[in-house]
Image (cartoon, rainbow, N blue to C red):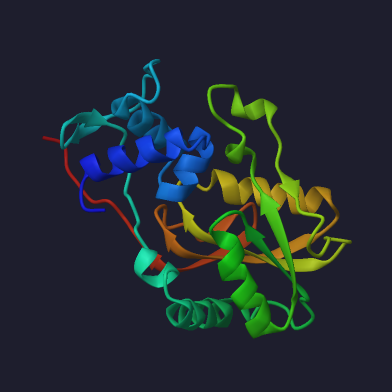
Length: 216
């Protein structure tokens, strides 16, 4: 994807397939606000929303950075190399950690490879945003999959592909603590915020993507 028009077209295709705006945000690695704007620009949603904007190609839109890591995701060998690097960032936190939690959807396959590298069990968490469309996301909740390892008061690592605002990672940290677990560290491919920690949990990333600009 090279420009905003590509993202708008992709958002329309995903909306036509029945994905919620939250799932579209996850698929395109953009914020919920950007996902809403893209869907509305595509004509898939008739109701406009008011969002912080800046001048972009084709009009005004939310201020955001799109991260396309499909060159990694479509090749299992590349994924393995990247997961090994991410595992290396986590390894210094705790010798007895035996659980890695992947945030669905994109974080789960990365977490699977990291869990194998670190020889831990694997769990997955589906965040509230996957249910979010036009309703208030604050009324929704995320879930841990019963098909994978449970928290059971264990120390764990958290894995995702990108951090856009930090909301999903913070939600996951809180959900793990609610289950009695203790998150020791988080790791992502790319961090748009340059975060060092979330609620006291260290955050590591292979890339920090920072937007630098000036007022005109």
